[in-house]
Length: 146
Image (cartoon, rainbow, N blue to C red; front, side):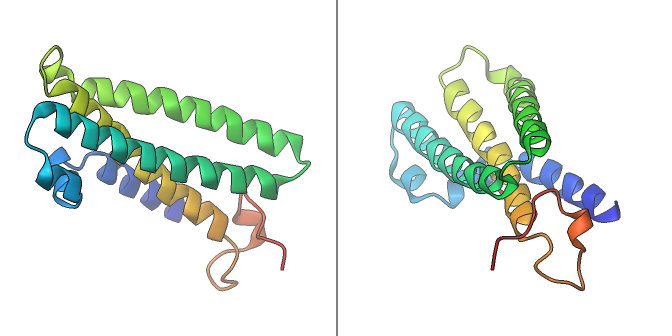
């Protein structure tokens, strides 16, 4: 329970990172000279994050196998997470609504929150690998077949 709370707090912290910190790590932003180019960089960053998230989501559903209840819970959680992400980003960028920077800020927010979800999915997929850390009963996704 304590680890779950810490992971939630970590995810919230990552989601709240300023857009400038993300842009500093992406060479695309260094080369961009117009707002349209910055928007394109943000779009590319979001696509990369979404692709990684979708790949991990597939791994998780594959591991859940025929467990229909667990698969449905994961799908439901993901749908609700998407609603949260969209609402949170709308809130975070509300002051730039209608401005030329708004699309970039919106996409960067989506990417940051998606990266936090990616970290959570990695944690789920790694759960139970270290016997000292967690037991299989604490893992929503069963360990990979060996």
